[in-house]
Image 1 (tube, rainbow, N blue to C red):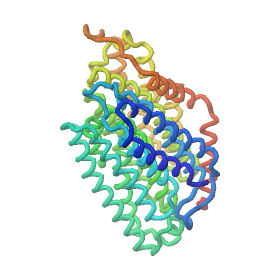
Image 2 (image 1 turned 45 degrees about the vertical axis):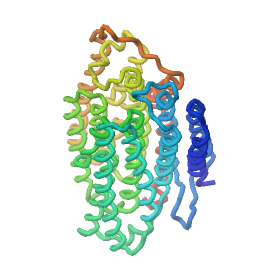
Image 3 (image 1 turned 135 degrees about the vertical axis):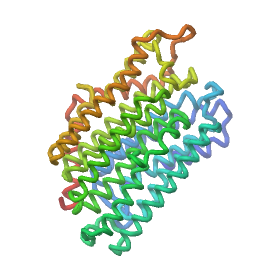
Image 4 (image 1 turned 180 degrees about the vertical axis):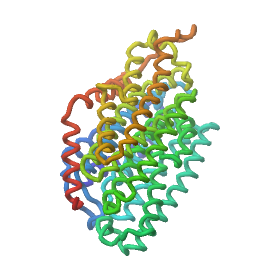
Length: 476
């Protein structure tokens, strides 16, 4: 029962792969509804799954925070498939169509399986295997379109991903050499506050920094975001970041928790550099996918603030903000995917006059951008407020000031896109965008969620209660 969501996703992936062998081109349009049905079934199974329990001799465990991470992964996957549906259909424009829908959806579901497993791993071997399953399929998805940009995206992502995996594996090796155990729960009692422990922590953070797009491990993001198909970029921006945060919380809270206070200043510096570089470089971007890449980098800097307090408040703030970021970012990408699907353009200037052509789409995109910027009463404001509160409680008032200034800077470049939509006149040959019903439904759900999460306190209180139980189980 504990592993039922993962088993359902794996079974769905294999069913899609086998069915794809026997379906005609038009019949393959049924694969998207089947994939959505499988993910929805896994969501239902997750809702019935106990939030405590272990399997495989303690190597796989379910806990309250793992439940929230899996919920985020499944919601992100469900919405991503909905947003991708228009590009997988047989009637999609040939120039931007995603060919081989069966293989595409299967790889996406196997990638999702790795992320689901990642949240429940409890030893170094299963952690590394799950992390690779959550990473390697993304190399294929990034290069799905066989053009120059897609090839560059896949190659750069693979090379830097291999380097990150090597760094992390080296850190795992040092941990095993020092402690003599693979069990994450047993490591804190066997570690000492010496250089070797800090060295292992630095190697692991560097490896995870690749997935979280922390500076200076962000070099792959702009080219991969630009070269990958927009639906893959949407999935990458949300799921990969969630997977990275899951690993970082496992390692820092579960393994290095006695030394977390000793490295808090280094985390504060890393957060400062990440959010500052992401926001400043985003200002000069002209391509909307590169624009969103540096936006994602800056968001990773805000997420790190939660590690400055080792208690349940910090853990809850990070998980809640991750959920908020997922739905808000996907609502922005829904419009980007539709615009690219029907115009083939990814330039910011090509969004001019969108409010006159598609008022509802422009309004949804504006809400998403304001949510990422932290404008009240949207949920992005509440999420940032919680993270800033964590930094203030930890005594890092200067960092709160830096984060507030960075949020102001981010509003400048988000408003650049809003200006294009609401002030600039549309091009003479511009025509209204025509979203399909599935993309429209996905956009409506994510927009509503990004607004309601900020005003309905139940979700955050549930996350905080889960974090408190989780940390109590770790002895904190």
